[in-house]
Image (tube, rainbow, N blue to C red; front, side, top):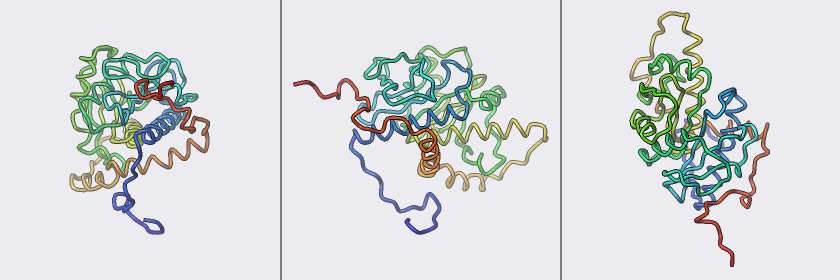
Length: 276
């Protein structure tokens, strides 16, 4: 790949192999970067406890790391993250967690073993579009990322606080990677933290474009074959992960104060070294 021009899906870079500890450090660093980036772009403005981003632990695969309540995303660091199992037992961390984060992400991760990252926020344009209860029309190259890869959860019963609520959302998501939760917000998942983050950002931007174009009248959708072909290039797992990397570099350049020293990374209680 070095020194050549390629489509992002056609790279011949070898797969990166990491130990479980190295992979945990990688995922948590990406998670912190995504959370700080989301804060900089206003996804957490004025919503209080709303908004959470979870990632599956690479070793305890029935547990996930998530941002807590009470810590602003602009200041969050790895030692603020909390590790929960699917029943809500705290395996690492010192802060409280939104019950909605537990029931939503545990259900999604249990239903989708292919998913590593799961992001749900109430970003401005996402929640405006969500009130329509419709999937996004495919009207641009960017929205092709969601062609046949989005769904709508029409069942809004107030604040999600039971595992039944979480399972209903996971069922609505099904096998796609993006979900519009009616009257609520957006959900994006991926086989990496990076892919989930990029999909969420792109979904919010697509909602923004759709809301801003509302006064233009009917818009002509992209034909099926073109939309499908475009999605394969712009929104595969590899492409989504690669497209988040410049955003990681951007927030690291502007705000790279989070922990990168592996010795300061949190570890699950079961895996922490014992004295003695």
